[in-house]
Length: 204
Image (cartoon, rainbow, N blue to C red):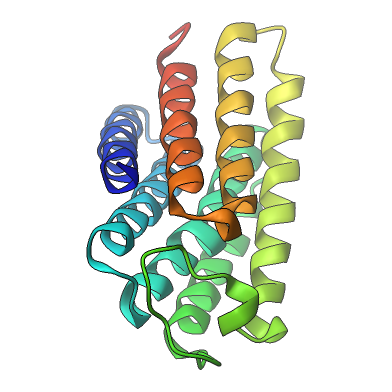
């Protein structure tokens, strides 16, 4: 069941990333490109969970999950929110961060073997610096940016922004509960994907 939930979340969020990318092609607004990339990262993180639950976790699936779900999703969504608010420096900073995140996710050594069907806990396999520190910085900064910009735009788009905040919070809770098992995380990831989808298409 957990593999199905995570796979469904991946498909739904890929669809949403495609919709946002189509809007970017029409409008050429940079924030839409960042949001599309953030949603694609969310989808790839969910796909890694599905692969790990279905076939067992290995080094590759864990690195993919940590890169897309742990390092990139919140940071890119937050960068998109800052660009929407007119903070132009968020674009170059996001590009530097993405490059750094990819390098860290690919090159950082794993401190213990990866295996099993439950989501591996980062603290058991990655050193605090640089991988876990980078994830903390990216997630905190991205989350704050997304929340502040969404709250500021509440009067203009109350339903959509409320759903987006609920979806982001749900996905964040799922990530926090990763150590409790794949099933719990997959359910939260799937629910978060549904709320993000609803929030993006609402009040368009």
